[in-house]
Image (cartoon, rainbow, N blue to C red):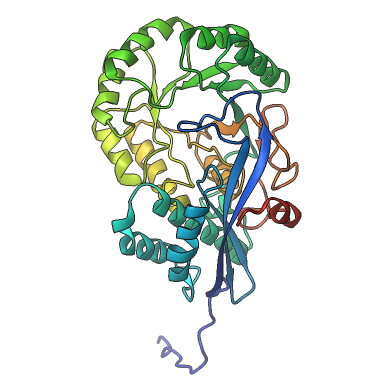
Length: 382
């Protein structure tokens, strides 16, 4: 005979993750050298400095989680939005309720944008919560995502835009000499693209990200002209990036695999891309597209839709580390993006510096790496 269930007045143990008692947004600006122009320099001549927009969450059990929001050009306005509109909402929440917190933020703030700065802040909170979850479980993030399929990832050097054959060839040869076997260009004119491909030869595969400059007709003309270069993919060729019908026309008539998604805000944007037959390669950015939680969903969509999952990662902080874990958890781990910049200081020291074109997956709890306090203090803007 089964025993009666035991009744007890003992309190149920609180989650090891605890409740969020402190939330901060910290903006860093770290100088860099690339030999070229920053590829986000669309409206001005920016300083060669790179934003790292950190979100720090602390719980009453003493755990600290780090997240990252996409940011450029010392964006103190965005930092204020995150600090004053988003973070107060998470104070007092149970940190292990990741899905509930994410939904609360998204639903409560959806009038302020499903794509853009508000979603960037939500993404940062989500990443920080997963960092806390891993620390509470005493496991690396990749284990929470189902376990790792690899201990290291191939990295591609994502070059600046040089605007000259000499500049892009020099950068391509330097990256190959450092061990990279995958290189992404950001040139938009044929002579520079062709020169870089010739410089890479058989030593490295080359991808091309042109960042939405063309109409469909212009894109089709360039697609034909570039066909003999054997590019691994053509990324974001048409304007605007959400014109999925235009992407689909190019994909149907063109000669290249089409990659897109870094400007998307959620799973639903990728569903729309798939339904439009617009892409071969999905490129969600963990610091833009809803964090770790959303990229898990997008990875599953890609698996069921015969679309390659290759996250975008123009980041150097917790978002980059989270992307490493996400990629390592895939059955066929994708190549990892690293902006080919020489930063004045690295937030994680040498831990996130590729060696022979590869990066190791951190094995510590949560993200497995902690920002260097000295770097945070030295380069803090707000």
